Length: 140
Image (tube, rainbow, N blue to C red):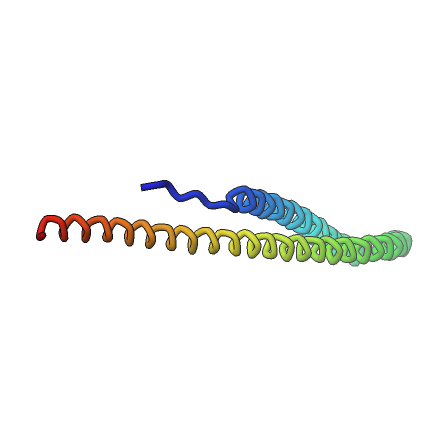
């Protein structure tokens, strides 16, 4: 019985490598998006702390400084919100690329499975033919 040899094995290997690379790219982009979201959360918490501290002050000078600082924080929050949106979009694109690479690998893998099943079926057919020949010789 000859062994099964898939002619597109190298193509399958390339597809597996591409899938793995795109999966790592997606994980990296997702990690960066998480870091950007964490920065945004820290800025929002800091803004709340500044408000609590500033509103507790009775000095006009301190309140005026707080308002100026809050304006600067608002600009930083807007910039950070934009970074989060951009990074989430990049993560989304990377995930789509990974899903496409995964689908391409599955196509070749399914083809291999079908060819292997056909090979096994043919081998079983050959084996049955040999057994039938042996039985007909014994009976005759």
